[in-house]
Image 1: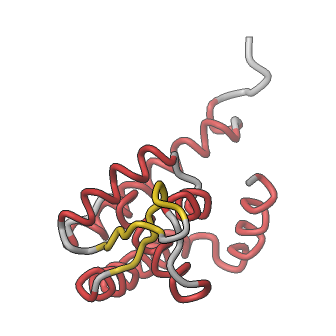
Image 2 (image 1 turned 180 degrees about the vertical axis):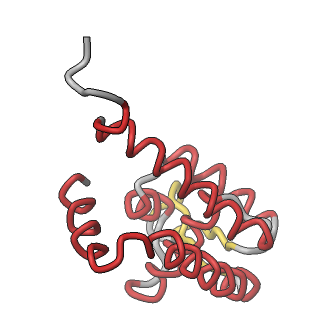
Amino acid sequence: MTRFSGPDDSPGFLLWRVTLAWQRAMRAALAPHDLTHVQFVLLASLWWLVNHSGAPSQQRLAEHAGTDPMMTSQVLRKLADRSLVSREVDPADSRARLLSLTDEGKALVVRAMKDVEDADVAYFAGLGDEQQAFVRGLTRLL
């Protein structure tokens, strides 16, 4: 037995459906850039961190993005193989890597960010004047 009269009354089910639809919009926005969503999130997070606090460690980037550190390391290796990210040994800790975007990585993230933000505007337009309340609600849940 369920406490909901149907799936459309379940916040979890609705969040699932909305998340899948939003992820499709993100995949479409990122396809021309040959980036997965997680690659974009890490590149954009790295761009933000570098511009606000200098070269972060992989651990700091994973914390900021909310990603698993091992997965973050694997994705960053692929991005480094594409010459989008530089991973240098931290002089203060030889086990840590300090990250930066290459010129190619900076250019790509700026182009991709425009397309992702345009896709977000289109996707969330249906919220109208309720968008800020929606963001506040998501922030509380997080």
